[in-house]
Image 1 (cartoon, rainbow, N blue to C red):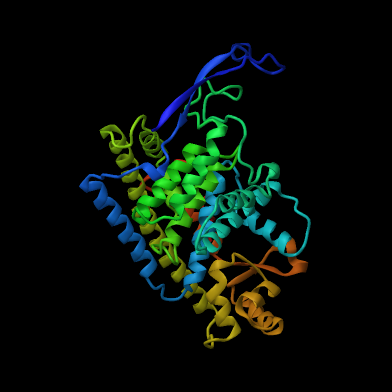
Image 2 (cartoon, rainbow, N blue to C red; image 1 turned 90 degrees about the vertical axis):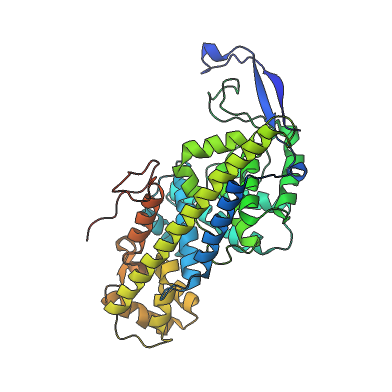
Amino acid sequence: MAHVESAIWPGVAGLGVPRTQRHPCRYDAYVPDLLSGVTLALPSDVAADIADAERDVLRLNDGRPALASLEAIARLLLRAEAVASSRIEGLEVGGRRLVRAEAARVLGAPPSDLTAEAVLGNIEAMDLAVHDLAARDRIAVDDVLAIHRALMRHTGRADLGGVVRTTQNWIGGNDFNPCGAAFVPPPPERVPPLLADLVALLNGDEYSPVAQAALVHAQFETIHPFADGNGRTGRALIHVVLRRRGLAPRYVPPISLVLATRARDYVRGLTASRYLGSSESAEAQAGIAEWLRIFASATSRAATDAERFSERIDTLVQGWRTRARPIRAQSAADLLLRVLPSAPLITVETAARLIGRSVQATNLAVARLEEAGVLVRIKDLRRNRAFEAVGLLDALTSFERELASPEGDTRASPPVRPVPYRPRRR
């Protein structure tokens, strides 16, 4: 049964510790139920909300963008969530700054922007979650650790990557003890069996995909198994579930970003899901239902916003094609226009690999698209010939800003969390 375990935090008298925080104090650490023992009895309205959310995700995945390739849109959505997810964690990097860090990496230059490197690590971790783990027959605890390791690889604390915590952590309060914290996760010795149980749920199919993703995410954030990077890893697990269950084979909508926009509801839902006692109690069932209601609502909005974004990218690609006319079908230029939405940055060499054509043919296509105003050379890297697709980063920025608006329209309601600056007028 879910319960709290009380403990005494020892007094600390050290340099920099405020006098009020030096004394011993009592705190309660929350230990959740094992998910394998939880039975859901959902109200009809919550079950209907979940069904609606799954219909919306299926509609997004069944749609056929008129021009842009499905793979390109999928990668672009994944990138948008990874970048915005980093911003939620306090990693502020603009789109063009990130492109320059990517360019330096592609061209073999030593990293000089550590914050941008951390965001690139977040993109890698999301890519690992969706394209590697989601395709496996079975997931192990080590696979979850691998996501975390990828996230932390390019941060200042790479040593924490993939390492399950051995000390007590907490959320909110002060930096010196957990006694006044908003939430105290399970004691460290409770974490390994809880992680094993979480992975068992990841591998199961006893719940519908959206309900499963909601339960996995909430349980992971409750366990808080790492010293850092828990939020980003928990967001990646949503992608793993929906991809593995076949609900989102092409596009996983940015659910976690909508939850971050509705932060008050998000915290309220997580708190409601952290019941005490038996999971069969009316209070426990009501709390779980409230969390599932909030998660399903966020899923529906994320799918709708992603569908609009896909249409916007199609319009952008149509504009590129108009500028570059005439385009012969299956030519290097045609293939490059199909993949550009997934590649805010290209070099001739990376573009050649993307479209499977020779460097010579790709070079001619890049030159043609540059002349047409579809590609623009990155000024800081002229000698190395790195290019940006015109309008793509602005589209990504607008999408992230809209996701941070409670009403999905920054003219009606401004962003309520950190977002990039509005795209410049052209």
